[in-house]
Amino acid sequence: MNARILVTLPVLTMLALAQATGQQNPNESCVTAKCHATFGKAEFVHGPVAANDCTPCHQLLPKETHKFAPLKKAVELCIQCHEPMKKQAVLHKPVAEGKCTGCHNPHQASQQYMLRGGTTAEMCFGCHNKEMVKKKSAHMPVAEGECLTCHTPHTGDKPKLLVQSGNDLCFECHANMKEDIASAKRVHKPVAEGCVKCHNPHGGDGQSLLGQDVPDQCLTCHKEMREQLAKVIIKHEALDIDKKCMNCHSPHTANLDKQLKEDPMTLCLSCHNQPMASPSGTLANMKGVFEKSKDWHGPIREKDCSGCHDVHGAANFRILRFNYPREFYTSFSQDQYELCFACHQPTLVQDASTTTLTNFRDGDRNLHYLHVNKRVKGRTCRSCHETHASQKEKHIRESVPFGQWSLPIRFEKKLDGGKCSPGCHAPKDYTNASAANKKK
Image (cartoon, rainbow, N blue to C red):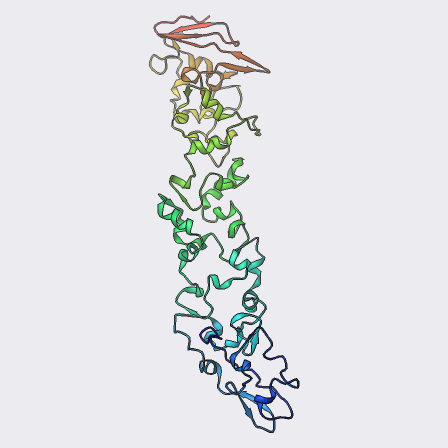
C-alpha cells in the first residue's frame, strides 16, 4: 500500500486496552481466533496488520498483564512511516489536533485510505452537519458524496480547505460560465464578487442551489424593488410565472443594461404574441398589431414599452406608470391624463383656441379641446387614437367600440385639414385656414 496515501494513521487507542490470555508473543497471538480474529480480512488492511506485525505500533507492557500501549503519542507514531503533513495555512481540525484516527481506521477499513464509514460522505458527516444534503437542491458532488472534489482532507492554503479559490473552483466544472464572463459586456455584481453570494455550494433552499427561490433571492439585494412591489396594486404577471425574474433578466452575464436577455421590446413581445386574459380585459396580440400597422406611437418607435408601462408593477391598470382613464368616456381633469402629459403638452386639451398647438383644429378652434375637455362624457384619447399603433397617420383608430359594435371612424387627412364620419356624430370636415364647421 502506498505510504504517501496512507497519511497520518496514529493509533492512540489501537489495541491500547486489548487484552488476551495465553501466549505472550503478539506476533503469534493478536490475530488468532481468541483475540482479533477479524483483523486482516477487510478490503483495505494497514501494512503492519497485513504483515501480522503489531510491534511497529504497539508494545507489550508488562508481559504478565498482556496489555498493549502505543509506542509513541499522537502523530509521531504515524509519521514514522508516513511523511509529515506539509505546513500550510489551513489545517483540517483532526489534523491540527493530531487525531488521525478521527478519519482513518488504524487497522483496516472498507474504504481506500483506511477511511472510516461506508463512504467518504458518511465519514465527513460524522462531524459535519448532514442537513446540507436535505435541502431543496443539492450540489452534485455533495449529493454523490464526493466531498474531495472541492475540499482537500488534510491541509491547504485556501479557506475551508478548498482546492481552488473562489470562482476558480466553480469554473473547474462550470467552464462555460468562465467563457461567458470573459466575453460578456456586463457581469452581474454578485457573480464578480463570488458565486457563493447567491449559491450555497452544498445545498440550497431554493432551486439551483440558491438560498431562496426567485424572486425572494433577488430581492435580498434589490431592496428597492421589494419596497416597490409591496406598494403596487397590479403586479406584472411575468414575475410570478415560469422563471420569474429570469424571464427577462440573465442572472450571470448579459450584453444589455439591467442584465436584460434581449432588447426590451423583443422581451415584451416574446409573451405578448397572442391574446392574453387580464383583470382589465383581454390584451391584444401586440406582436400582430405591430406587424400589420404602419404608424407606431412614439415610445413603440423607440422600442420602449417601459415609456408607458412599469415592467414590474404599478398602481394603475395595465401596469401604466401614471394615471390614465380606464373609461372610454369621462369628465376631464389634468390629473387623469398624467400619463399622456408626461410627453404631450397639457395645453393641447386645455386651450379652446390655438393656431400652433395642433393641426387638429377648425381655424383656431381646438378640436382636441372640443372632444376631451368636457364635464361629462369627455372623449378619452383612445376614442380616436390607438395607444400602440395603427394603419393610419397619428395612429388614428380605424373604428371605435360602442357596446358590442365597432363603429368605423373613416378619418381622412387632407392638405389643410381633414374629415371623419364616425358613428358617434355626423360627417365633419375641418380646415386649418378658417373654420369650416361653425358652432351651432
